[in-house]
Image 1 (cartoon, rainbow, N blue to C red):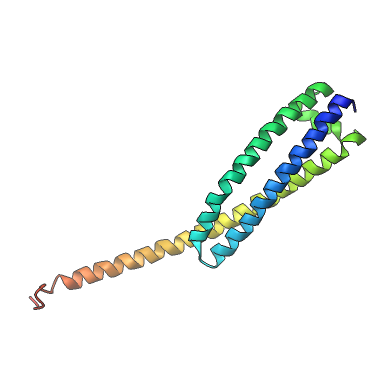
Image 2: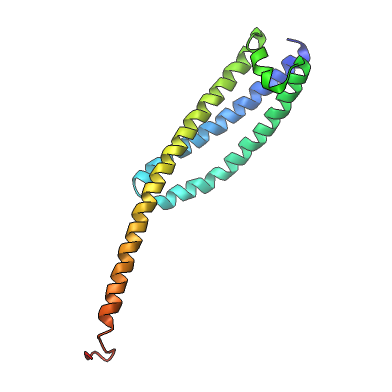
Length: 157
C-alpha cells in the first residue's frame, strides 16, 4: 500500500476505533435500559434515551469523517466506493482496517438487536400502562355516577 493510502487507512482505523468505543457505550446503555424496563422504571429508561443523544451525535460525526476518508482511499485505489473493502480484503496492509471495521459491524448488529428487544419491551409496557389508564378511567366514571346521587350537603336526593 502506498504511503498516502496507508496514512488514510491508519486514520480509518483510528476513526473506526472511536466509533467502536461509542457503540460500546450505547450497547451498555441499551443493557441498562432493558434492566430498568424489566424493573418497571420507565422514567429511568427515558432518561437514558436522552443521555444517548450526545453519543449518537458523536457517532454521526465519526461516520462523516469515515465516509470522507473512505472516499479518499477509494479514489487513490481507483475503485468505486462500494468496491473499496472488496479490494482491501486482498491487501495484507489493510488487515487492521478490515478487522476493526468488522468489529464495528458486529457491534452494530448487537446494538440493533438490543434496540429491537427494548422496543418490544417498551411496547408491552405501554400496553400495560394503557390498560391501567383504562381501569382508572372506569373507576373515575363509576365514582362520578355514584356521586350524582349525592347532594353536596351530605343528603341523598
